[in-house]
Length: 316
Image 1 (cartoon, rainbow, N blue to C red):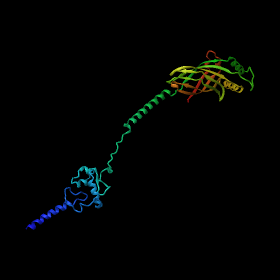
Image 2 (image 1 turned 180 degrees about the vertical axis):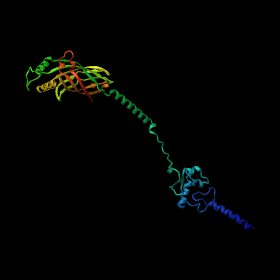
Image 3 (image 1 turned 120 degrees about the vertical axis):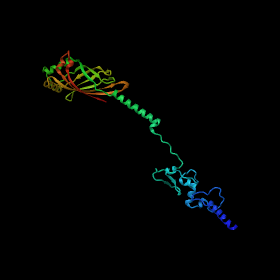
């Protein structure tokens, strides 16, 4: 009886020792067990590949996958399943659950936060400088953008009346001439009223003006230095000289007779204008003017010699 009763007890004791010595795949044996089975004494290098990987994975205290929690006797939480990443028993492979965004294995390094450029001080300063530059450019363009001036002849004087009378004698037929005939220079002094529509004033330097008749130069002129205030009118003095030869004189007389003593001349010239802050601008002038020859002899209203004009301006 005693031998039979002790057999079941020995059997239960043997089963306990066997369970204590046998561990789940990939899990360490329970602590406190004194059983020294061959499996417990095996080193990791002697274990098969699957068991070595599982044992290494379970020993990593930083991993909290479903498999490690099962090894530690814990129950996987819903957050582990929602995370979508479960460590495989095979080293180096991460299993992604369906409906989960792909994630890379954590290497222990946290990505540096990205700073938006618009929130940085440098970008804010750049935006402010760009806005100020744009506004300044618009204002400067509005102030300095040139507007075409206008002018009217208000005074005309004959500086060399004797030379003018000599031309009149040639025109009347009182004097004969040929290709070798030399005509005197006729000089005039004129004053023009110039209106400046610009927001800035300026001082005009002496300019060079040429007078043409059908593409051939018949005279030249030069203006005196003049200051014109913004949105105001100033007087500009001009000294001009008429130079004729025999052929030019004949062509002018023929044109005047055909067109009732009226001639169309071309005036071209330009001058430098200095504005505020030392800004310099070259103004180029091209005008087609209609003059009445008979008004030259009207001393009281000689300025009426100018009957019309059409001018074009260029700014360089």
